[in-house]
Image 1 (cartoon, one colour):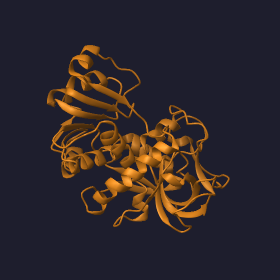
Image 2: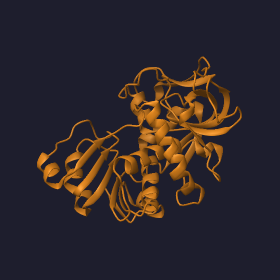
Image 3: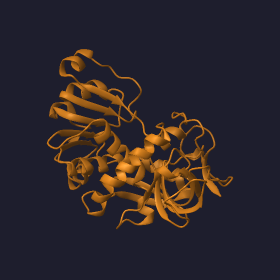
Length: 319
């Protein structure tokens, strides 16, 4: 098969479409003939050499795919060769085939095409596991989502609204603000010209930025508020006044989906299938795809992601 390999840490030009060995399913795994994969910020971090891979992970980037099952490992039940699926991965999605634990498979939601389904698993599992399973977002609470026009943000806005929350999001510019409002955001803040800290308090903050946002995030939380940090685009360090944490009874979580155990991922995937797939099928939550590109043009897709002009997911398609 062919896969996108990272020749060495660096810019998009280090991505190469090369011949590699086909995967074989271990016990409890299936092999998927990949129709499409989708970009995530973690792919960019991996390309730069800033995201150490969990032990045993495929060296090829890609945290989600859609496709058809082509082989079953020992002990797999409930799935058949030929089934159309999408899947949450630990890596290896930028390829023509990938092996994945059966517990990380999802059906393709009704009304969603197989190519588009590649943009669902990672983003939806990230949003649901952090907003609901970790932060416990409830009806009537106010959520601040940083980066509301991105792959995570577009789902976070919609899922939070479906839960009955009020949603505020930061965006870069009026066009992205308009798109965020179309998805249900109650208010938008242009981070280029406005300070989100002046628009609180917020019960929950979902932060993909990290770094210097930490102090302002904490100051913006309401009493008993929860901050969930899932990205480090602004850096690895930030200042924190512990008095704010103590006297407002705040909780700060740092999480990542990729390094969770197979069992934890399977539990998240099961909840997503049960709780979020019906929202997608009835139209309450919709997938936003910015563009599709051939898998062999992964370098160009990475350039597009780093340029920051996209809204929603960038999808890579096998020819």
